[in-house]
Image (cartoon, rainbow, N blue to C red; front, side):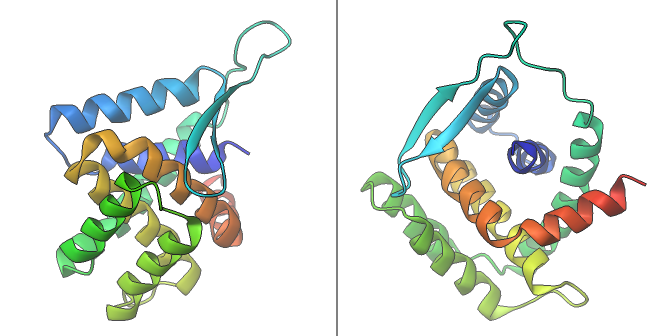
Length: 179
C-alpha cells in the first residue's frame, strides 16, 4: 500500500524549509516512490529498495495523486500546530538522529519518540491516532531538516510505524477528503 508514502511525501513537501539539501533529499525520495520502487525496512530501521515492475514496463499512473496531495497539505497544517507549540523538542530530534547514525533506530524507538511528543500535549479536538500520525510525520520532517541525508531512513521507519499504528485514521481522512 503506497498511499501512506505518497501522503507522507505530500506532507513533507508542505512543510516549510528553504534548505536546499533537505529539498534535494525530499526530491530524491519523491522520485524513488514515483518510479515504481518501494522503500523496505529490515525491521531495525535499515532501508533497502525494491523495484516493482509493472506489466507495461513502467509504473502505473496514480489517479489518486491529487487526493494524496490535498490530504498531505491538510495534515501539514495540523503538523504546524506541533511546531508552533514547541511540542517537538530538539532533544527528541537529536535522539532520533543519533539512533539513525548508530544504526539503532527501530520502530519501537521511533514509537517512544512519538509518545514523548504526545505526552507533553495533544492538540485540542484531535484524536489520539491522528495526532500520533501527525507527530510521526512532523518528527520525520524535523529530523530531515536537521540532517537532510537522514530523511529517507527516518521516512522508512516512520512510514512503517504509521502503516502499523494509524491505518484507521488514515483511511478515515482519505474517505472524508475523497467526497
